[in-house]
Length: 56
Image 1 (cartoon, rainbow, N blue to C red):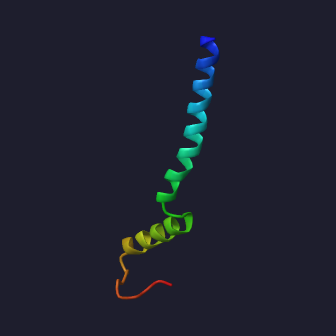
Image 2 (image 1 turned 135 degrees about the vertical axis):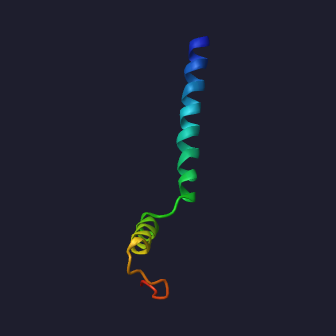
């Protein structure tokens, strides 16, 4: 009986983690946003970068 309760508890914890964890990913920026930020950082690192020109 104790083994069944432990297994049930472990399954419940695994299900809870799998449900809760993806919602934390919504805080992260979308891949396109990360690509854009990386591209802008690379442009800023170039010696001829001009901050007054907007990149589309």
